Length: 134
Image 1 (cartoon, rainbow, N blue to C red):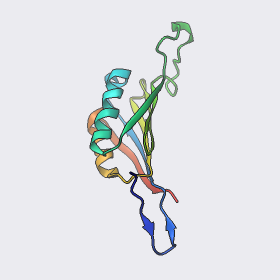
Image 2: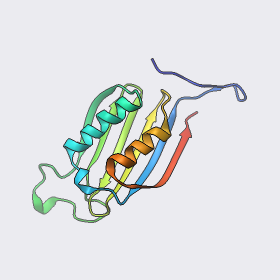
Image 3: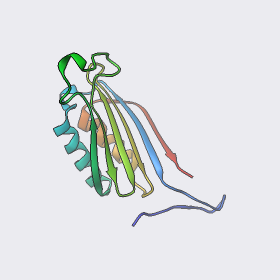
């Protein structure tokens, strides 16, 4: 069951939080379906989330002449649905960047999730924002 925080000052319920994380100088060898699937599995175990459907958007199965080649487009995107919302990742192969969003109405340790992601992709955190959803 999801855990909710209650804001006594404003008398409003929190509907969760979202971690928005930008990683640069990552290892692009980790930007493939097999490794990203492992990342989702390990991350969900770490932050105690139950995984559901996983969906991909990338060049797998796309003819070579139709594949993205621009630095800001070439990469893998995926959304891992979890019981309490979703985790979205976008990797950019040429730029060696990872963009990650974790949104859940169940509380989680955003600092632990960010540090795990940094280590997993061997990158540098350039932006980390956690917001409470109301």
